[in-house]
Length: 505
Image 1: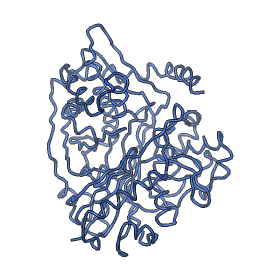
Image 2: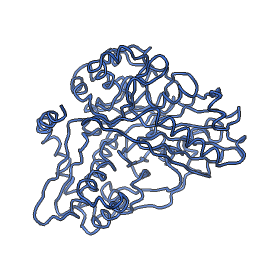
Image 3: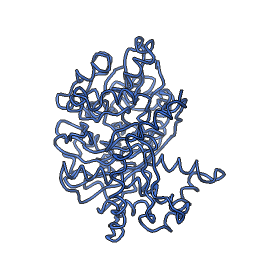
Image 4: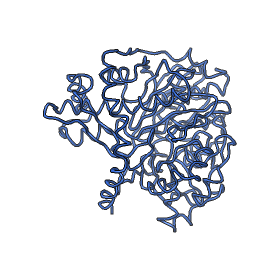
């Protein structure tokens, strides 16, 4: 029996699963690490905290089997859009900025809707937004020039970990294509984007295929993990790409939908899908496969905001979420006309505007706290409906959605999502989707599967949700108002952002 480990380096924690070479999960481990918010718009982590957590969880998962000699491969998934600057010794010069860091919004606005910005979007396939390392580097250049000058490389958290494990600066095509700096068709760094950032390709890692493997692990880490010499490491891909594969959403007409801290809805295809409004992202998985879709900033993080702002602090988050779902279930679909625009942390798809704000619309005296609880859930679902409509228009019809992420623990939220989208949703509760995607990528590298469609025999849905036509009609009435709210309010959002930016200073 050979074993494969799939590790997913997420925004809030590292998750790892160990599976057989046939994809059967044996054990799963998870470890959290902190995030820091020193100023509004800042969303930072300590790269060494994450590296230590990765080593700790890998050791746990390796120690979970007695026959370590049979550990064949460790394959990696990682969150996108992170950035830190390092010196020539590989030591961090900055904290790591996560995808949620929006301090570079002014630089994204500077480039968006310009001829140069359109050229960069067509080259990179990535909508222009402050999440992109492209703009984070520009921010460092202008705001901390001494760090910019001292920086040897600008890298993501996965690159930082691989450098420490193997002594090489490499980045997989999937992570590279989420930077706003990578030419997704030519598989090299994009000259126009490099020029805007003020760097050259030497400041970035060498792009490599997501199926690239590394065997010469530094001795101290091989001993620490107790791994045999023949265990190889697969660089893998991003968490979004691998979540589709891990969930089984690999055929035409299938989407994967994830809600964790943030969220995304995505599909695989053989070509990038772009539109004039730059609504959709396009990431490279392998030489024949692209991931197209849209990510939202405002997923589970909005529920945390609601709980911390309006609910009982003496109880745990889990207890408050349970009450939130229980109360929301007492309200009819459509919340009696209460609509929530969930842009508390700016927004990515489909508007890609770091200045966007949250809105409750239609408040009247008949609305209770429970209405607001349900409106939060419905508003997040409306974001996904808006993106799905664009995907269907550009990439063909959708019939089935595979759901994963923390939100699948709530049957109510899953049913709301099903009714809003008016699509069948399948859910599997076995193994984290991104970590399992890393396992499946390793299975392909050792020949256990030949094509992505072959994973269908390894992924089984534990339950299915079917849309209710009456509930869908109730939601569509609200959605007809929701989908035009941003366009009506975006100029006011800019004014509000200027007011709020005074406080940031």
